[in-house]
Image 1 (cartoon, rainbow, N blue to C red):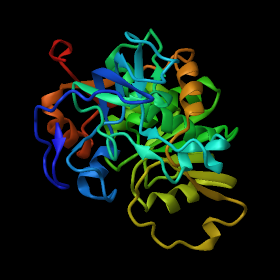
Image 2: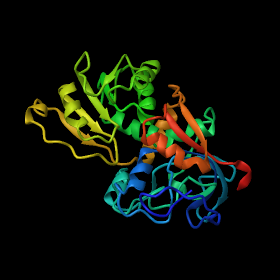
Image 3: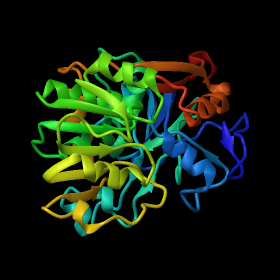
Image 4: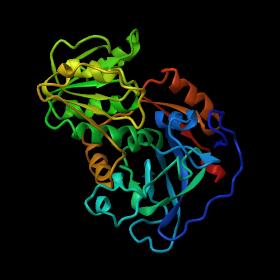
Length: 329
């Protein structure tokens, strides 16, 4: 499913199966989750994507071919491919395990063709073995919603009372990990989303309400997953002194001006940028132990536009996942 022009629907098209070069593997794709970042690419919020482009950066598939120089993966192995698809490996950020900040980083489904397809190639350094207990569809959301959510959770330190703003794909995973770690989860949804609030309570939240409401207890930390700038001052109002607000998205609407009093008393705001390989290793080790259960709504690959529209309108419970016909590649 190809994006030819920003703002336009994806188009079903036959493309040559890509061949792996030095350091790459060729992957037969079984599933790819649909992420809000894909909407940001389509809408032009993220500038200068590769065009035409195959979207998708939560890929699960089986390695078909191994390129030269790859020794850590084997043909027939099931792997996942995330958003961060390549980095230089030599800059100060890469050398210190912060390749997510590399100036030369390239991103799957944005600057590299991604997973809305039957096959792709990927840098072997950014392919993660998938725990056996997850089906392809169940595993796909772990590759972004899970990884970015886990990195965001780490940034809250040992916060006991945790608020999650926007209860979608990432929050429904993070809530489970947070509860496993002994934290109290407070879920915030858009006003009137009673189904989303019920879903949050079903999973792990001890309280759920709309984003315009203060929680019953001051929070130690809040993670904002919804790309809505007005949630920043709302979350600052909800966190206690010394609390942190983590902005987990890659794009957010304009943050309105707010009084310094909301930030005072050592409250802080922090953003999350991409992920590191260590995030991937650590999260995919802890997920089966929780165990994280992903809730997915599946679509055939050719219905990618429908899945994106349902995500845009807040109609997905958990995560949307595209499935391919395994016999066609």
